[in-house]
Length: 308
Image (cartoon, rainbow, N blue to C red; front, side, top):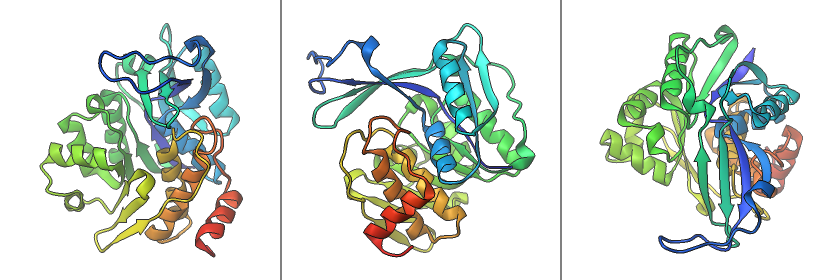
């Protein structure tokens, strides 16, 4: 049985310091040669699955790797953490997706992404083990693959969580409408929310409830987050942290939120658990490096918010 089956691009994250974020015509200095960059494991769906696995849930992944050394190491790492990999495919002759995350001294970052094997996928998706899946999660990924994933979960009557990402290529209007109609819970930031509202002609994000969505979580960076239900909105503050690397903070938030939801807490408390998980994530280099287990998450939550 899987609490969650997640999809999205995998990523070998190469984290590179740079002098500043350049504008058009400028040159920025790399702090190291690209081949010496720190490489960590990432990808939004994988980050959420790993976060939930560490919080005591059983998760699986549906994604596409290349047959390169990076793909072999990626598979070995998620298997080591106990994540179900029966729906992880390997494409022969293709390279595994990679991100080049260039981080300036002020914490600002730009990302250059090579989709590799994930965007080389073709054919018919045949997901295994859906009769044992409780929830599905779709994040940014190759649109044809993601659409097939959502269709199969819908046919199996598995409720869907949609974690948006600001990638226009992954979300043409037809995909936005399909995912909105299929989703029970949505996670997005303000820029993603604006894009979806434009794509669907919504006056405001709350209009998404008309599609059957039950919960919307709007993350606002340093301003915290807003947990929305048809009945009310709950503002959630950030949890103080020593910022090292903000990559993956939103994915950690999603994992903390869902862990709270599946343990029966209210949406407002789930939002605070998400904010607490995000604080762990940003205190180390890499998306998955510092994700907490449930005991650590609970301790930090209670230190900041009081008894859980």
